[in-house]
Amino acid sequence: MENKPVIADSFGRLFPYMRLSVTDICNFRCTYCLPNGYWKTDSASAFMEQAEIVRLVRAFASLGVWKIRLTGGEPTIRNDFTDIVAVIRDIPGVRKLAFTTNGYKLPQRAQSYYDAGLRAINISIDSLTPDQFKKITGHDRLRDVLEGIQKSFEVGFKDVKINTVLLKGLNDEELDHFIDFVKDKPVSLRFIELMRTLDNQSYFNEHHLSGTIVKEKLLRRGWHLLPREDGAGPALEFKHPDSKGTIGLIAPYSKDFCKSCNRLRVSAKGDLHLCLFGEGGYSLRDYLQSDDQIDELQEKILHLMNFKRSAHFLHDDNSGVREHLASIGG
Ligand code: SAM
Ligand code: SF4
Image (cartoon, rainbow, N blue to C red; front, side, top):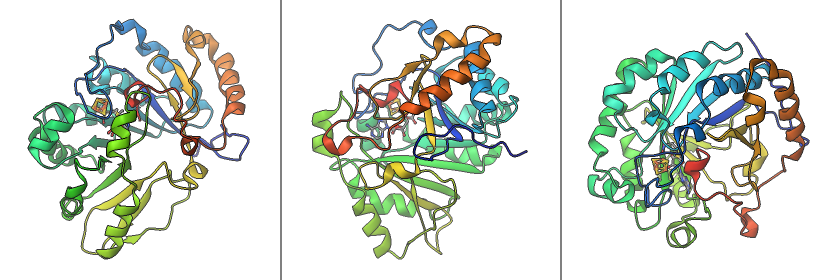
């Protein structure tokens, strides 16, 4: 059943896609995100509980949002992660449930994720070398994560993506290795340009690398850019006739990145973020407290859309107020 996105902004962009963070907590210590791990003392009640998440998804789905990606922090760290999935999958209008994970316990849990109703999975892998993976994430788990990818195929996931943050001096020498890695796997590996946050300014200066080098390498190696599909997000997607997998490039610092923005974000604390790099969120929490608030909640969401700006201000050295992406889900 078609459900038309009715959430639009004043620039004519439509928003069928929501990234919903379910926790800020993470067990990894990725050097660009949470280098000291998650240390705050937020109690579980700081984050939306299941009933609030359900009300939120109902409201967005009735406004035409049909794709939802659960993220975090590490979303799978929540004990009720699969319960949340199992409830929101049946909400009218929801057609695709995806999640982004560091792959923690994926070999053991892929089946339960699929059974709960998840159909698309993004797994983060910043190095294919065990030592370097450990250096970047603080965990010696590359083997488990790779096993988790295999297991995801086995249990039935057909939409498997890998997120790789491009890091000068840390993984840029592995570009060929990553490209070869997808040759026999039906996955899309996305290189993501490192984004500046409040917490990683000097790290950013040391390790940020423009996605142009990926594009140039791919073209040199005989890859070609696929035509942009209608309604697709801002990733550029490349294909090679001898490779089962594709390579994507997400370059927020590139010109026109924001023109194809099709997503809204809600943090685990129930704040609507109109842009990954905006000036903070708008709390929806007061509107999530009972089932009979749905009309009010929808009105609030539609009103807030008036404040969505045409583009981010990264080029003016303004990355917004985000401490790190674990608080909003990337
Ligand atoms: N913990 C999960 C994971 O790592 O996949 C989900 C949350 S994480 C914030 C979502 C994505 O954002 C990951 O692929 C991560 O590599 C990416 N990310 C985090 N901080 C980033 C940054 N400063 N620049 C670019 N990507 C970043
Ligand atoms: Fe955790 Fe994901 Fe951030 Fe890494 S990128 S520290 S796995 S939230």
